[in-house]
Length: 401
Image 1 (spheres, rainbow, N blue to C red):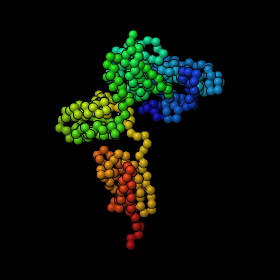
Image 2: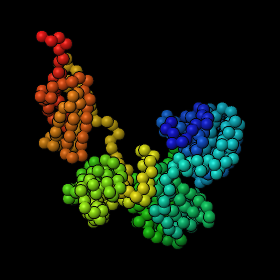
Image 3: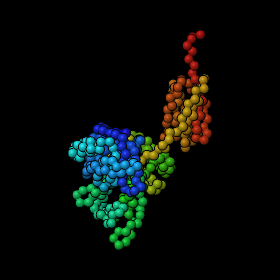
Image 4: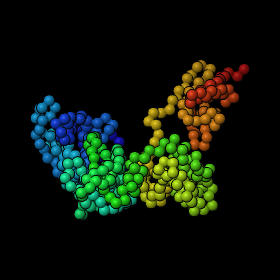
């Protein structure tokens, strides 16, 4: 299980859980983990649910039907505004005691520690009075909607009565719902809760602004094809800025200025605000770059301040491109998949036993070969996005003759 920086496992054991939402609910098998920051149920490499200390209201032990109808004692986790799981695990009394001692008994300590783990300030992006509706709820609740870098919250009175992580959002759409005496446009949010899809609706005056911001931060996938589409409408310097941010995810303005040798920072701001983002909005419907005063890099966990970020989530194909190296005695034969790259942009080189491949200005790859080869012997062939390179090994004679 991947741990957060500073997170330590207190105890874990094999378990099964059931959300108990309907007669058709089925038990899921996995492992229950208690750390110094979270309570998690993990199945394989997938986290089916996670609960923070501040979300837990109570832990009870109940006796109810388990697999094949057998009655066993189970943990019953009562948490704020989330589906409630029932967990069947060995020695539930000990688990209840340990969870309470480490989580319920010291909210302030656990929460502050978790804040250190995720030490990015949770900066408010949007805030507006609005309504919130859950399935089965008879009436809209009215309060304040709050969007931050990490969460969507609904505040009622002085407390948060509903919150979801942006990473848990799976779909957004505009739906008509009864509001007052007539139907109005609302945003329907589908999100993952304890391994299942849940739904909620929100209604606000600036609905399109919220829909666009939520989509950009939670669902927008930016792949190479998207960037290629946008750069067709950009000048050379703007294209270089966009490709750099696609590869690096974020950069401060002085880094971007050095990249294109801009004389002032205003030149960069003009490129972004007057060329790159307007072109992106025209082509994909959303600005592609956003300025963040403080944001955490999800890949490294490091905080970066006052930087420009690529909007949405950089998307790369899940499968690795084909790479095979065959040793044919005196020769090496290399096969490499280069999807979407034109043959006339390919540049190949050899340094010692490393094959270097460049294409366009955004592709660079170095392949370590199992033997030193003769650079002059290189024969390449490129067809159907597959590069084939044949190289002769450099034979080292151990005897001077």
